[in-house]
Length: 466
Ligand SMILES: Nc1nc2c(ncn2[C@@H]2O[C@H](COP(=O)(O)OP(=O)(O)OP(=O)(O)O)[C@@H](O)[C@H]2O)c(=O)[nH]1
Ligand SMILES: [Mg+2]
Image 1 (cartoon, rainbow, N blue to C red):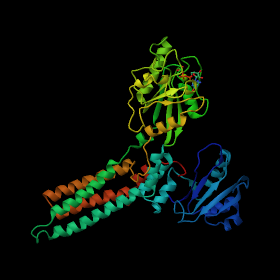
Image 2 (image 1 turned 60 degrees about the vertical axis):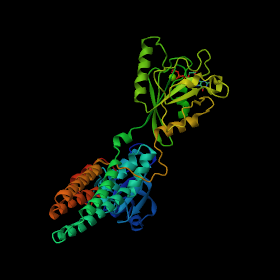
Image 3 (image 1 turned 30 degrees about the horizontal axis):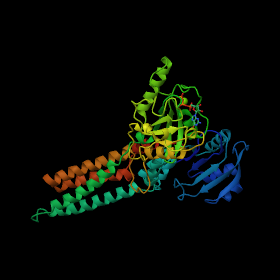
Image 4 (image 1 turned 180 degrees about the vertical axis):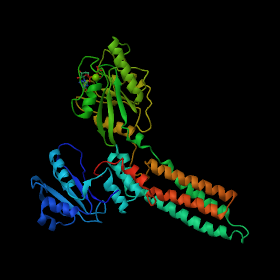
């Protein structure tokens, strides 16, 4: 890859109050001069925001009046000179500005992840940190995000550096020891073995922490279900705080299931409102709707049964599909019934078989009202606890990169071969060779050793502008 100056927008296409573009490379000062004029460029000061009028260098036409910020290399994200521009968030302006900058000699459009790639190449961060930048951007919940931040601040780098140093130390001393083996009667192979086993355990531990990104990125799914007219759709609207789904007093209002996104403390979830499930379908359409509800329930991470206790004709427990065990039961329309739990405490309502996990407070039901808002905050807390890992006071991190995983597996295999040699055939050259393999595998995690192919595959998955 060449060392031309690169430019890219940092914000997505579309209208916004402000957009952001980034330029990095040796021609940054010239870019400032050509856009804002000689005088502005002469007074360019690192880390000081300036207000200027950007003009097209070719036509002199005004592009926008905007704020810009200069970072002088090596004290910048990429380690090169960097100019950040904050025009108004009109896609026309962003396009014009981008066009004006990339038409300057020696400047081209950045490839995805190229700013971060340069940051890595210039020693601003190692590969585990560079990879975690993508995680910080794409984490779908707080637990993932906090983990990404831990990786970005070098948690894995430190761990790997420690392991690499240990391996280096052990192998240096081992080689000495084995060299003397011919003279000394009994080199301490058992002692060496114990040290290798301990390093092996540390590597295995990091390896075990691996979580596939695909499963982590998946939004958890909560499904509301229950008898027709129970108040499921009203509850979805109340949880969202807006009238998103259709509500009526006609049983069977919701036909197809409706999915919305709901933000909880721990992150975003998929919340699904289903068609009411009755004991018997009234017609073919009804049967189809119920079938759909059952289908989505099979995928659910959290099944919430909504029961209307105000309906005296039916009573709480009637008309509820007993075949599907809920994780949690919600008694709706609490504004229509008196205080206390439903049915005047007859207990009938509490007979549902639940499979509530330990993450949830109890298998108790909760009274909610979509009208008055009673119980909604509690319901959100319960959903949050059930669907998201508690991240408080957890210093541990997990790895998310297949590449890092593969390197760790290589290191582990090397240790195993070393142990095997140590037990059966402790020849110094063979041991030295295997130890070298282990160290290389560890070093490639942080990118001390890397290849163009590896960098290509890491950064190709990045956003443009990062
Ligand atoms: N008073 C009161 N009425 C409610 C409450 N929640 C729902 N309702 C009423 O109950 C009726 C049914 O509400 P929906 O939310 O459409 O019920 P649903 O469970 O989605 O019904 P289906 O889609 O037919 O299965 C409507 O007339 C709502 O206004 C509540 O908390 N309090
Ligand atoms: Mg409905």
